[in-house]
Amino acid sequence: MKSGNPSALKNGGDPLSTPRSNGGGAERSPLKVPFIIGVAGGTASGKTTVCDMIISQLHDQRVILINQDAFYRSLNGEQLKKVGEYNFDHPDAFDTELLLSCMEKIKHGSVVTIPNYDFKTHKSIEPGRVVNPCDVIILEGILVLHDSRVRDLMNMKIFVDTDSDVRLGRRIQRDTVERGRNVENVLDQYAKFVKPSFDEFILPSMKHADVIIPRGADNEVAIDLIVQHIRTKLGQHDLCKIYPNVFVIHSTFQIRGMHTLVRDAKTTKHDFVFYADRLIRLVVEHGLGHLPFTEKQILTPTGSVYTGVVFCKRLCGVSVIRSGESMENALRACCKGIKIGKILIHGDSKTGEKELIYEKLPSDISSRHVLLLDPVLASGNSAIKAISVLLSKGVPEANIIFLNLIASPEGIHAVCKKYPKLKILTSEIDMSLNKDACVIPGMGEFSDRYFGTGTKQRLP
Image (cartoon, rainbow, N blue to C red; front, side, top):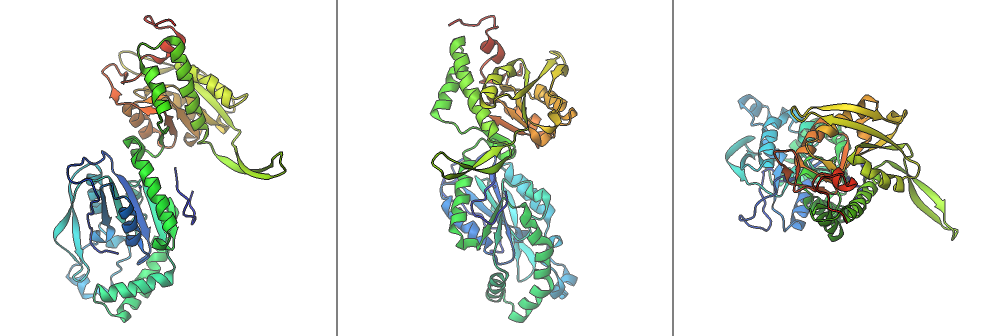
């Protein structure tokens, strides 16, 4: 959703790159994967002020601000002679390859040195700025949303939208006071380069923004909502930051308690089924919440008008036999009369290869949204095979929602890298797989425990 409304949140200036640390101290370990936010907008739109306000509210996180301006290319002698003819607002004015390299390194926990660009000499000067790993990275600049490679690094993309007259007035004040230029030169550069580049490169990048902030730093409501959204994301599993198509149900003591029972090796079959069914129902309900919907107004018994929503009716379930069949009752309870297909996949114990043994799917499945049901996502091999079957039947990848109770990081990596457009929804992400490709800590062989077919199944 893209909107000028400050509440339009989806489902991450100062000429120098300035590391800023808030709270925590050096002894704190950074998050494995930092939350990366891109802040774009026209010249003097108030981007840095917006960033400062976000940073001040994230006082209990380690935050750094990296300015795209630091990655301006140093001008050579010939360019310096004709500096008035140089377009500093064109994408080619920036060393985007160096920017990408620095962002990749700090994203993976490395210390990096950011260039120190001097606007008076138009060159990078020593020393550079040393930036340490952190919880949140804010990348700010006029063109940070222009290059798709840079955008792909971001968890959240913001565009600061400020009136052009206000921006021009701010630019005149900034360039004359801070950069030693006269008003005539500033206006000439604005007419020649700044305005045309804004129209050609910067304004079109606004369509990539998750959040558009009208009036810049004056819009405190929008900034408060952004900070709340960031705090929510920081509390999520690292994999949710890597893959925007992975969703984990918000954990509560109730959910944690049910996981404790279904994971306990001493839990009876009766209790295992009871609490597994409760968890499955929650997963299915949350999965349905990711379906497309339209608004609908209805009349209540009191004669009042209520504006609600209607979800898409073209829906079906597909269970991966046989553990996936445990999720069918919950889906039927939520969606009366829903069609449910089945896929049976056999794995070779020696090679690990998966073979399709049986499939029975609705004939019109290509026109439906599909809830793929399998309680445990382990290596991801069976899931990938099942998804490939759905795609071969014409189901769009983006129309598949894969529902699990638990998932391993290895399985999530495997599925998301191959199918980045589908959604994975789970109630918990576990630590890893063991040498036998079992999820750890896991819950054991789910289908045996649920259907009572295990050789060591405890009876109630």
